[in-house]
Length: 194
Image (cartoon, rainbow, N blue to C red; front, side, top):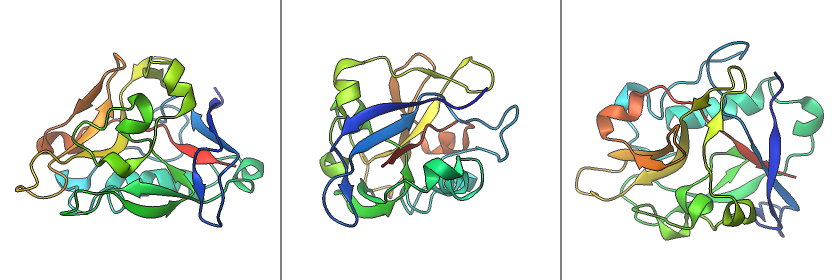
């Protein structure tokens, strides 16, 4: 089954080159390690560590692996624009700008509720302003699957950054993991801009 994408925003994301990206898309399905996928999607953090934040986490490398390999259509990939997204880093309460081609969404971009993530991680996408069901199915099995977000739960900075991270569960709710759950297998649903 081919991957499906949907438009989630117009003139929403800041381009690295200046101005706004015309259209932001996201995969409507969850990318998993089952079936005909050419890579393994695993955990937010290898060995349960998420200390460096989203950039440097296990899932960050999987999203980039998805983008860098021939998994994403080359014609589409040639039109993708690099954007600036807010991501957390160790010991920081504010999100730092990061240049990304392919990225996971943050909690605030899905339901306008940052929870315990930085408020400057992003803004609510138009699609999610009107569509509140966050549940998605696997592109391979068409069964609802949980998927990672790029947001970390910063509720206890005394532990260190990355004590927990957010994900969307099969029921469409946004939940936070415990540190021990960061190595739980979940899929991801990347977004990109043209």
